[in-house]
View 1 (tube, rainbow, N blue to C red):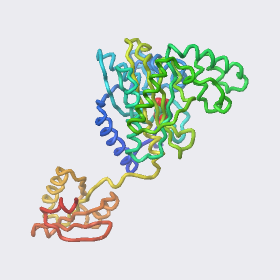
View 2 (view 1 turned 60 degrees about the horizontal axis):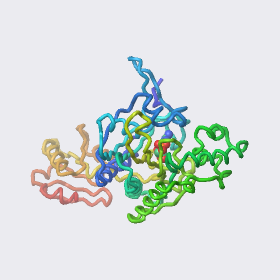
View 3 (view 1 turned 180 degrees about the vertical axis):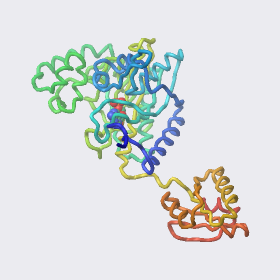
View 4 (view 1 turned 180 degrees about the horizontal axis):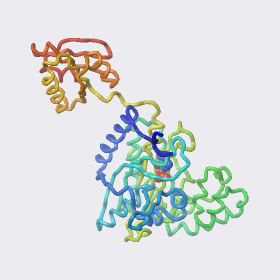
Length: 407
Ligand code: AMP
């Protein structure tokens, strides 16, 4: 019996992985440009970090965690999201002041697998810790938008909302509960259960949403400070030219989430998977996992979903050229040429097996090399044969001019 990858997980191989590599490269560039340092945290953490950090009332904690006991009897959980880990790492490093952290990696949730909903999936993540300034919210939102544009998703819509804070939310929540109780018998089972534990989440329940058009929404009940914060986020997005739409029903359903919530929607994907990412402000998170008060705002983009949204548009070939050895006498010189071109920054490969020229050309086209450099007899005249695979154009090029030709 052959062994297969576990249900809900994927192998990401070439050529699709070329798109992934490009996505990660651009992620590196953009986060660096916005001033975010790389952060790497463990793939597993104490279970408590997520039960307190993601929240007991969330679907993640109630149904989706990969939790196990290790040989030392500790309860550990494969991370279902990055934010609690980043906050924990910041606390543990006795972090004070501002920390801007970027990362990417696999997340684990026990979901019913389907396209765009996997048990191991991959997120890009930034967290901006240590400031409650609305400029930070706007920066994080802008970063995600610029990134999605840079990789070629130009139909992205940014939706934003404010869900208030511990000053204004309790009174609003009472209003909402009253409204929901009056309609209890029309709500789905999950929503009915959430009326008391997590009423905000009912607002964005896909099933109940149509019934809740006239529900009281958080933005209409913000305190002055939250309203000013929200206005400033929107103004700043205007200043930097990020278009957005307000969605009064967009929520993050936990107490430690405050104020800003946002999502990136790709209109040409199925509704179930059209959110390629989202984020928000979480000024209460640090305390909920036992630390001091540290404000923060962050975002997570789902790579697997972005790939779905990009469709078949796979990145071009992995190579700039393939080197074919046509004469065993000059094999050593050919290897030296490969090494030299690679150190000049070209993507070069060759066939390590000593095979026929025909077989090497086959390998070159299987690897989708746009150009082939043939090292043969002409080497003794100080030249190689250079072939453009697309046009079929073939000519002799002096060895010293190969880089020029490749460019
Ligand atoms: P969340 O951490 O739930 O706010 O999700 C942020 C983003 O991660 C979503 O917008 C999706 O793009 C992606 N995502 C979340 N869960 C999954 C999953 N099970 N499979 C694939 N992508 C996911």
